[in-house]
Image (tube, rainbow, N blue to C red; front, side):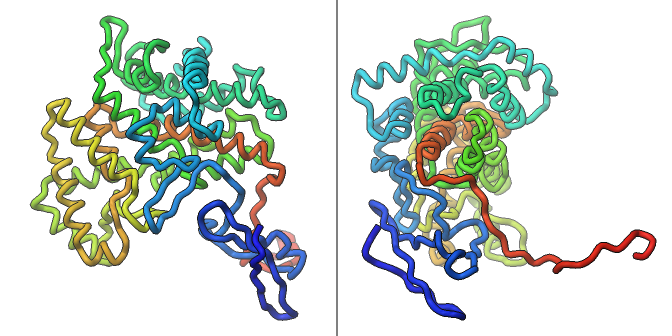
Amino acid sequence: MTDKTLTMTFDGGEQTYPLLSGSVGPDVVDIRKLYPDTGMFTYDPGFTSTASCQSAITFIDGEKGILLHRGYPIDQLAEQSSFMEVAYLLLHGELPKKNELDTFTYTISRHTMLHEQLSTFYRGFRRDAHPMAVMCGVVGALSAFYHDSTDITDPLQRMIASHRLIAKMPTIAAMAYKYTIGQPFVYPQNSLSYTGNFLRMTFGVPAEPYEVNSVVERAMRRIFILHADHEQNASTSTVRLAGSSGANPFACIAAGIACLWGPAHGGANEAALNMLREIGRPERIPEYIARAKDKDDPFRLMGFGHRVYKNYDPRAKVMQQTAQEVLDELGISDPVLDTARELEQIALKDDYFVEKKLYPNVDFYSGVILNAIGFPTEMFTALFALARTVGWVAQWNEMISDPEQKIGRPRQLYVGAKRRDFVPVDKR
């Protein structure tokens, strides 16, 4: 709370409302009494100017290209920390000490296996089912198997559920991939890192040992960290909204997965990769830039611009470096990466893109990396869901603990028919 206020004038008088200040970022007008005071609501499609909650987890300054998790810059976390450190940070608010990290890592590694009956559950899906459809179903079904962690009023059960979701999501995603290609499921190996274990479960087979490539493992660790949380985006808001009704945590995360499945949210890296493949080679870039500027041409440059960032996405810088490391390690000469680099350089200097603040975002390079590692494009969003589970769980826990949180119930601007009387069918 600050001493500053905002006075609103309207037909019938004026009202003054307090301004709330966060630790960083713009002030927020507290309009909770607007309707009782004035009989009016606000109208904000997409909630682009509305704060629905208080949060101490993630801060974004889109104008300056800043992303902080609990105050720590995302590039520092991506370069210097492990995914388990970031998970602990998001859940508990501080980076763990050595003994805390060891205990947390041990706990997560002991929750990685799925209930064996879930293997049968997978077989109920068609082989060509999209991995996100499988993940929605399996995560939602967890509440049918783990009854001892669905009481949201019990802090211990909430934490057990949080650990289970973080631990089991790589297993769920890897099994979804294995099922679609007809290979046997690979059980977790607790001695490996979080990302190394996932790579082995995805690409390993029971017939031979799997050796984790350290460069690929580091790339996946960075991708997971860069996607771990991103403030009140569509899927996180969905998790919070579902959780506000008192739904169990497994149902809430399944709702987040369903929202993330949308092409405008989680499918952007797949769209960016498909665009780069369509362009094909660097010499064709001017043609496609001209098309992007043409209002009558449906073509759009994917991987540029962001709903929040009006500057260079800080995550994209890490992704660019990682893409080169992975391709060099795997000995891949990918014209898609050459096209991406050239397109980025041209767009950053083009007045049209500079004026519209269309900078590369995290999706621009992540698809190139995942494709080089060997993931099919339909797995891209599933990997996003895997990483974002940590943020969803942290946001859900914060919401449950917030004494000001109420069940979500947005208002509307009604534009339908006014009251009218029913007419029997024979008189219409």
